[in-house]
Amino acid sequence: MKLMKSFFTTIIVLLLFLLLSSLSVVNINLLAGSDLSTPITDKDIDLHTFNKNGSIWVVWLNPQDDKNIFWLDFETCMKAAATSLGVKITILHSSYSQFAMVNNVKALISKTKKPDFIVFSPTKMNGPIILDLAEKAGIKTFILNAGLSSEEKKTYGGPRNKFKNWIGEILADDESAGYVLAEELIKMARAKKLNGTDDKIHICAINGNPADGSAIERLKGLQRSLRNHKDVILEQVFTSFNWNFEDAKTITQHVQQRYPETRIIWSANDTMAMGSVDGYKASVLKPGISILIGGVDWTQEALALIKENKLAVSVGGHFFQGAWALVLLYDYFNGIDFVSENLEMKSDMTSISWSNIGDYKNLISRRTNNLYQNIDFKKFSKKFNPDLKTYNFSIYEAMKISKK
Image 1: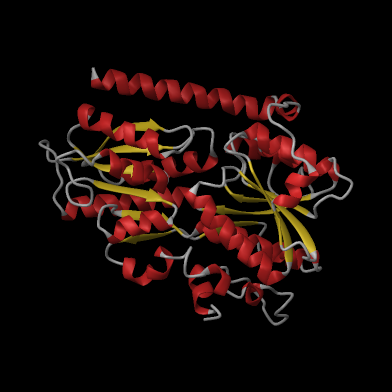
Image 2: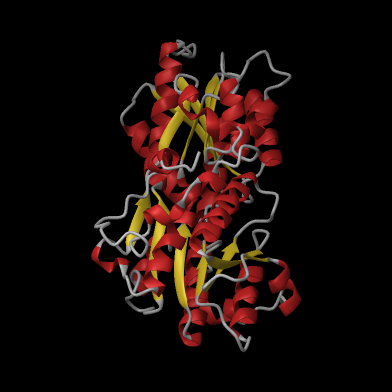
């Protein structure tokens, strides 16, 4: 019965993913013509614009709202870089609505004064629509964090192919992140001898929306890891379509009933990992001791739980992407193209666990210690440093050149 339920759940998720995949390429004009959210006004734009005297204007389309802890760090770092570089930045939230993001772009391109760049992270396969709208309006675009799906890439190619104004992207190495997360959790489970009655290690996974590129790639990483470990049993891949805390908490409560021998919860982001920790509060299994939970993002809250030995591991470092993108766009605007290096860059993804959390103590309190504001992002720019031959977008390097 357990296997039948798991089988049918997996089939339903796969069918939904295939349906969304087909919509992403075939119905580009249908989605572009949608009007399911209130258009932004000039007042909205002004209210969400920072560093208004900047020499260039960049709009960042956040796929989430202003309460999401990963994107909060992402934006704080991005705003610090904008101030350092002298870039005017407008931040518009989409609250995980692909329609809201598309409508924000339509509103922006209708203005008399248009931004120099639109930077965005595609959500629910709206990437081609936004690229098409900006292309027709003559606005340069740059993609961050999650890219086009493999099917979309077959149709539209990469930066500067079909969409000439799509000048580049910096993506998280999500496949690697999913792989590293699984490997770390399995290694820890072996060390703690968390084997089941069959002498195997049992794992459940909580993934994000199957239409999101990051969810697809992180799951691929988990699957690659599992192929290396024949003694590890994947019980089921659960889905939180909005990648949220409450879904994960509910899921882990079901896991305790349905798969009681589970000793690893692999979560595709830190928010769901923290929801899983909360889901085990009333359990005889104790997070960090008899049940190991890990996620992706390096959020401040997740690192604090690692320090408390409740969360086992977090894989991340990609919240600096927005800052690195502003460096590239600033240089590009000033005649220094990054085409000679790479149009499709990847962020390094590193694991933080209890064993090395001491090396990252500044990240735990980064919202109160002005960590981002103390980094001089001009030192990463070729415009400000003519002798700089290669970009060195490293979080470790950023810490070293902090103004403190």
